[in-house]
Length: 445
Image (cartoon, rainbow, N blue to C red):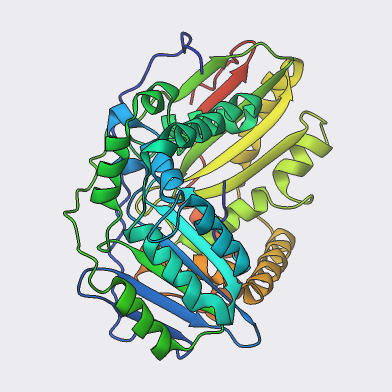
């Protein structure tokens, strides 16, 4: 139930607001924390495997979470994680770049890669009988990539093109700047990096980043689908059991950015981003917090869509979503509108956020529950979704919750409980980012 989300700044001074990390008690890891259909194993080198056997599916999927996210990048090499991820795919083990991709295609693999603040993720799904062969290929990727010098310029160009595409997606751009300003450094970094830093990156930078952070200690492998756990674990031990751990360094929190910022851009539209504090995924109030966000956004009957778009016709897009790191979290909101209606859009949106503190009603809660349960049913049918979920839940919680347990948590949500949470944690202390032809008047509180 996770709700997933240039130019000079002359108008607002940069703030040195202290980074405040909420007091989140550590999650106790139980002796046998997994139900019967779940399995887990911790190797001596620090790598953890967690798996879910899914009845009635013929597929299997996995998700590697490697401790190689943007928080591990040097300040002068922002974007290095994305560049290393791209280069790791350009041949590994006995396969050159073409053969590597061809063999995955022959096995019918659907794959995906990505970089977040904490991790680089490599995920793949295939028919269950092909899972052992696909794991063999990914073991080469994670342990024996070629990182070929002759393909380095091409790899860098791909990452720079992805970075450049943000200039054509102004909504994405303003939300990146919002998170960069809201979270204390380095947790607000963009996975795309920065052009100057990427241009200056060398192949030695990539090889060094790979050596330090593509390591077993801190890596979580989530697997879901039709699996034979004893045979699967034996193969994983053969592939990764002798993987040598590397020293771990934890990032230190720096200052937050400005609480209000404007990015000049010649346009007839203005993009608005708003963020405020929430509790992390592993906090005991997570379900109440995300429930409140679900009332704000997520359907055509939600508050922001109804009040800001439908009733007043102020914008063409508006939403709110929940975003979490392990110890920090936020609610992030977006509205895209015309320059003429931007100030009113900002004011009305902030008004709806403040009004949320007054509470929700029973009809809103029932619509939220129906929507969440529909999503849980969809997860039950997707090995890819479950592989990603079990890996993320282990990272955040030290255990995996069955979908039935999550469904029960949703059933237990009450109007009184969410309203109590909102009284204790009202939306406030907003960070606001705008992008467009002129800055907007910011709230005083």
